[in-house]
Length: 119
Image 1 (tube, rainbow, N blue to C red):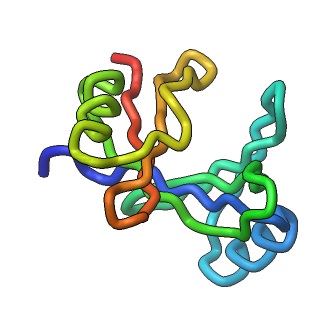
Image 2: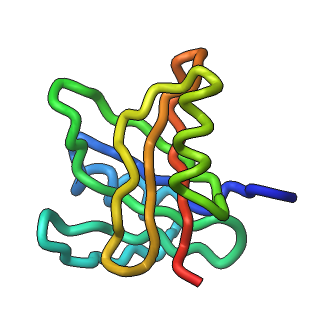
Image 3: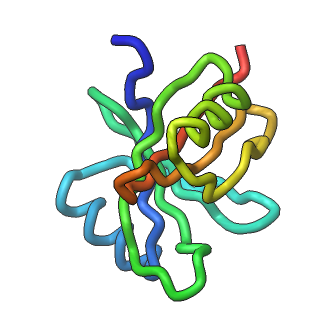
């Protein structure tokens, strides 16, 4: 499948509560990765798409899951999304030298993350 979902991220107002709940519910392996801004928790699964858990950074927003789609050209795809009616919520951002992401809202109001890993 072209442009598969490659990562699913929980943006939560209660990181510890979410880690306890999902760790017990699904027996996921959770690994904390310290960054300059926060601790990011990687969700490692045996099969399927892995993900992460992080503190909600949008003021006043509740907790939500955000899927990411793999793209070959993060800049071009992000700009093309706006041409098609999307709004950029988070412009293209480097992720610790591993790749780049952006977050858009599609014309129906749904959030979607775009991801381009470094080759």
